[in-house]
Image 1 (cartoon, rainbow, N blue to C red):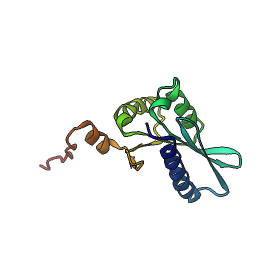
Image 2: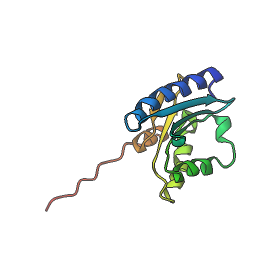
Image 3: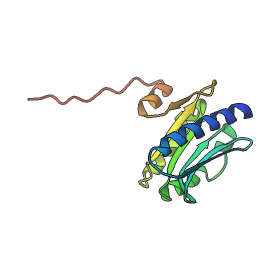
Length: 144
């Protein structure tokens, strides 16, 4: 689990990056960030409506019940969802997030952060690397 200072740094960095990302697509946005003991939140509002919600999770916050329901609620509200988790939990959280896909809720971004607090996008290739699996082979059909 990162120190509270590291959690604040990661959350602040995400808030700055989110302001740039959302500012390119939405006018008059307000970006709010807050850090509790074990969770960082970044919320982007436009005219009082949530446009984007980001969670900087820790081991403690990931253990809370109904975490996936909270993510689903954001997606059902048609808002952008971004989740950042500790590197040690990235593989498991990636699999849990795949459960949302069963309900057509797949418009989210998942990141993990390393011991230095750097964020890394967690896509399928990175997930395979973290699990110790070889890269996927690209499928090339033979032409007759």
